[in-house]
Amino acid sequence: MKKIIFFSLLIILIGGLLYKMYWSQNLSASLTIENEAIKQGKFLTDKKAVLYFSTTADQDMDGKGVSLAVFINDKGDADAFKMKGLELGSVAASQNEVLLVDKNKIRLVGDTYKEFGMDKSQYTGERTGYLEKEKLYFTVFNTGVGANGGYNSNIFFGNKEGFHKENIPHYIAASGVDQDNIIVLTQNTQNEEFHIRRVMLSKKDMHTRDILKINHSKEADFSSLSPILSDEQFYYFVGQKTLGEVKETMDSDIVLYRINKKTHTQDEFNISTYRNEKNITAHYPFNIKNSAHLYNNVCYYANGLGEVFAFDTETEKVIKKFSMKNVRKDGVRHNEELFYNDDQLYVVRHDENLKEKYYIEQYSLTQGKKIEDIKIRGLNDILKSIKGKSIYSYDFKMLK
Image 1 (cartoon, rainbow, N blue to C red):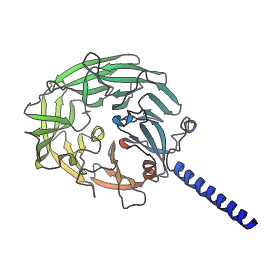
Image 2 (cartoon, one colour):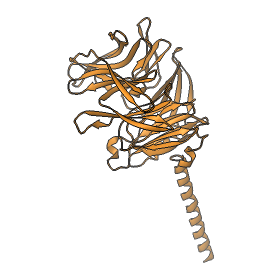
Image 3 (spheres, rainbow, N blue to C red):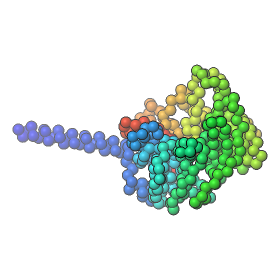
Image 4 (spheres, one colour):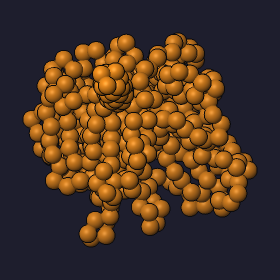
């Protein structure tokens, strides 16, 4: 009888240990960053990168949408902070501070921690950024059709002192930052007109100014494939012109648009051409909002095939600078993301054959070659820990 009791207790003890081990592993590989930890002033000290993941807006109909800010430390270990869902959500970073946004809350994480609620939930993001001169963060939402039938893109802007809300009464097809202004490409979906507009922020006020109308041929459908970039003379952005009807195959041109700020002259430069293409979406960038970058008078654009193109703003020549290796050509994505910083391009990559499925490639744009791979440990386990929902990557920032 004593042996039976002993073995029964042993089985219970082993079972308890296995249960504890399973759940501790599950927790250590998933949502391990608690509220108290992220509020610490030294939280970002050992963090080298952050990724933003979320469920889509339609998955939040039950109010159980999820977003994750996944921080990668100097050792390559990934940990996640869980928030409410926000499709197309993004992250902004300044020195020693990160702005995190979900559907109803804004958080400033870093030297000091602050959080601010929203008066109404948002479900789709557009762009998040930081304006150095004004010391202001901003986050723009694709809010939707308003009560009067017009379109609303709500914008919140502020800093640790507080955030203010205004509305940009347009659908935003593309956006970017020009020095200390937000530049948006707005689209009127009824007459298919596109306008470049400037959004100017101060600590408590917002003003918009219509700059120009895009010369867009009604014979071709247009869609944006990049953020809006700018230098002293021009605005730049990449778009796709779809020619003719969309059938089993498509004809399209990928074009760099250049607009003179003073004269409003508009020029187009062809990047690539596709004819009778069966899977045109395969070339769409990993992340349209982060696909292009301007550095040393060269505009870089990376498509979904891993091809990086360079447009020299002085010679007006387009070349294919380099191609990433082992990029899928069928358009299937595994949370690949892009981040540019001066001469560097960082790319989150996925390889099913690796034990740790995700890693970061670092490229030199001017040299046109890969510099190194940066390992990420635990990211695949974090993504697998989300049950009952599908989660997707929407932003990526290197913090150091």
